[in-house]
Amino acid sequence: MNKIFKKLIAFVSTIGVVCAGSMVMVSAAEASATPAAGGKQGGGWMSLILPIGYILFIVLIGYFLIFRPNKKRKQQEEKLRSSLMLGDQIVTIGGICGTIVNIKDDVITIESSLDKTLIEFKNWAIREVKKLETDDEPAK
Image (cartoon, rainbow, N blue to C red; front, side, top):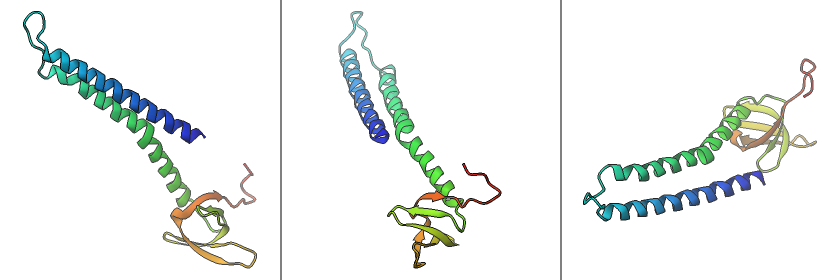
């Protein structure tokens, strides 16, 4: 629910900023097309500052609402994959649960049932990890 709400807010705010920016650009174009009362005509590089500012604002909103959270999520996933150890309980993106019995480069072998069925997965297919608790570490 939280992810859908964030995406909806990002979409609505982006549409609002685009609409406001286009209205300002249209009014700026109309103002520069009609000569001022003093006979001076507006234009030049000063008329480009406002549209460029709106474009930069939209890019910043896109960065903070889309790219930055994705980057953080990818870093967390990479940290999770690099901390895998033998004996950890995992759940794959397909919903298969098991215990890690072998790790080679980017291939992980898990034991998934009482029959000791071995299944190999790529490490990017892991969704959750439950660390193996030892006597040295207290339970969290």
